[in-house]
Length: 248
Image 1 (cartoon, rainbow, N blue to C red):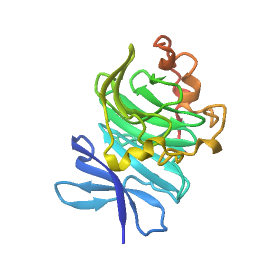
Image 2: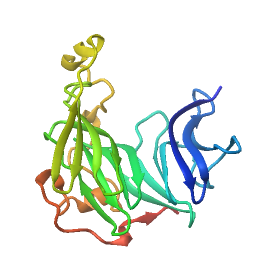
Image 3: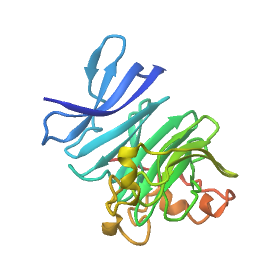
Image 4: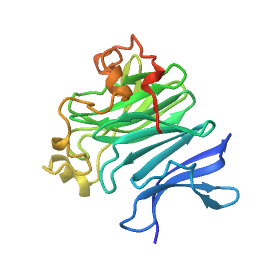
């Protein structure tokens, strides 16, 4: 029996057509791999060679010529954010962290969540090779589920340090953050707000304490000094294609 999750759809994709991309386990103990479902022919196929490995690949997002997904040890958190160019058939490690989860791709932009000692959301502009950390309301809050529009505005959910605690929807631009909506959990879930259990939130006690300590190819770690919107800074940029390391 196969188990599938995290579907993403793209219509009239220049390379894939009308497609849904998703992650699938062939068996409960098997590795998670990416699959493509053609909405016209209703057929399932594999992505380009080299994308699926013996590790877990998941949370795929397709947009334009790019396929963004995460990779990590089987039955553990995703550790790497990978972008595959469907036109050139090349893959790039965009970021590495204790916990990685892709967000969205739209036009010239993409976004993702990364956690080490704390969790943050990152915005990346493809044409200029620039990355910035999106500002969040409080230093210890948990931002998650980011999406991005074609103007580079990031929409994300933000909670307190406990699962479901004071969840709010935010919109982040280079100039700041605006709260759009507050969510009140149903009565059956309200006890979780004060629970000592972190729920789905990654246990960051096992994470490195000095932020992104991964390979030198990590865009997020290289770009933080001049591109940290949590300090309301949108000046400066990093434009060094060598930091984008193709997977060999």
